[in-house]
Length: 282
Length: 158
Image (tube, rainbow over the protein chains, first blue to last red):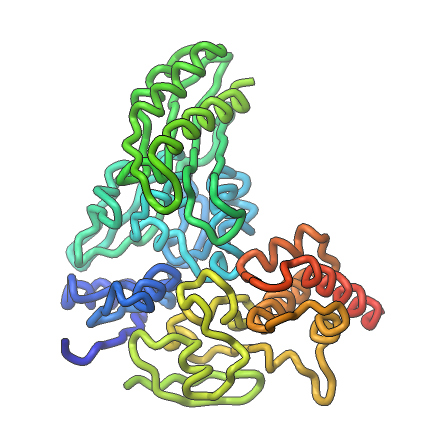
């Protein structure tokens, strides 16, 4: 390995130009909570580091029916934002449970997504909310739905020359219902053993746009499509909720790891889906 | 190697830092400011906690070059000339330190809390130090010390 390089990109164009030049050799740095921990554990030794903390991607704003959040916005800024609390309370709740105060001061929403942990808290919430991601490069830009973004643990469709610019979240509407729960071995600084995020529309007792998401039970944050479809257009009752929870548990492909066994994850996820749906639909 | 300019506890410094050098490595290795401790080195234990432009961060996973032009406060920066900070006094009086390894991080996390919220509840204190692990005394005495310091500081201000 030659001498490593550090660039502090002045703006988004420069960041894209650098990514186009260095591609896979480069690692994008924002808050550093994942990247630097991996460097310290000697899992990573980047030849080129491109710091994007100063390129103006720290913003939260309303654009039409969407809430738009820049990729380097910290978790702390998201939790504190009155706009996020009003327009995407599920994201505010899930983000408030990431790490601990110091981690939330450092870590960013973009980092939570591009690191592609199957247990990522913000990613799980954003998947339930049906968020879209705007990816930019020197060649142009494209939008990708969160459910198409993740391809495996630590893997996404982001190309080596691309940068995540912002997250576009449909704002809360009348009849929007949501619930979130993260299960960990302690309350702070913990990777989820299981997390569940649910968002749906409830109008005149009928459910629509049902999105049930499970974290840490599959190679990627999992949108339980079959389970959600069972509720679509229905007036929920106890028996249906149990059926949906069971279907969600069947969709997951959990593994045994240091945090929990696959058996435990399956059992507890089913119970959590049932509990959260009952809370929402009561 | 790129040059890094930063202010630590009121003093200006200029040092070299590599692309993946951490702020903790600069503080301890180059500036010999050893209050912040090397614990887990992965952002889990909080022994390295410092304030960066007033915000609590874990210096072991803070890339040093991203601190360029910023102000760092370590536990050493809590001391007022000739006098301990009310938090330090309260930790002493409440026996809130045993082996002492977590103490610098605990004190800095507590300062971050009280700077923003001078009248925290017990639960808010617990949340504020939730990123800091103590393996000796447990947390009760630490929480009590922070509550007492908050009260003392409010009295002083009044």
